[in-house]
Length: 296
Image (cartoon, rainbow, N blue to C red; front, side):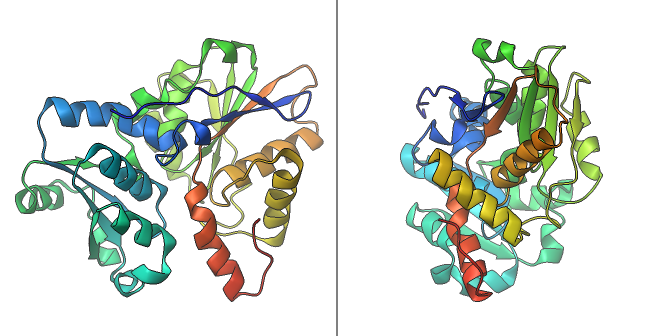
C-alpha cells in the first residue's frame, strides 16, 4: 500500500503554525492520500478489479487517484465533467498527467455529471464497469473521513484553533471528529454555497466547528490580484508553495483574521496545508491568457 512520510509542523509566526500535509507523499498529495487510504484497503480486501471516480478537468482527486493507481498497479477510470474538455487533454496539465499514469478518461456532459450520486446512474456505471470500486467526487465518503481523522496527532493538542480549506467537506469532517472538545475547528470553503454545512453534518460527530465563508474570492477556482500576490509573497518568505484553489485562500484568511485581531494573542493556530499543488500550472495558464501575474 501507499507509504506516508512523516512531517513536522512548521512555525510561521509566534501564533500560526502549518501542518505540511502536501509533503507526506511525492505524488499522491496531502489530504487525498488520507482519503484514499481506507478506500484502498477495502478495494484490496474485496478483490475489486479497478477504481472509478469523478472530477473536473483540474481535479486534485482525479490526479491523486491516477497517481495511486500507477504506483500500485491498479486500473483507474476518471469520469470527467464537460464534453468540451475532451479535445483539450494535451493543453491541460492535470489530464495529461493522469493519462500518463494510465487512467482511462470518460468525458460526459455537465448535465449528465449532475447525476453522479444517483443510484440509477451509479448502477449503469457498475454494469458498464463490473467489479470496479466507485469513489465519489472529491474522494469523500465515510472511509475518507476516517482517513482524514488521522491528520491530527498528539502534538496538535496544544492548538486552540485548527484551520482547513474545504471542498467537499470530508477532510474537515475527519479533523472535527479527531479534535478535542476545547479546540475550535474553522473550515474555509473554496466555493460559495450554504450547502456545505449540511454535507459536513452527515459525517461530523462534534459541534466545535464553523465555516468562514468570506475568503472564497468569488467562488471555486476564482482568484484576484490580492490572492496571487499573497501566494507569491508567502512562497518568497517561507519557501512553501500554496495552491490558489484551496490552501492559498485558507491561509489568506488565517493571516487576515490574525491581523484583524480575530484570534486572541494567547491562542495558537494550526493551519492544514492539504496539498493540491498540481493545480498551480492550470491556474497559471488561466492567468497567462488574461495577462496577469503568475504564481511562482
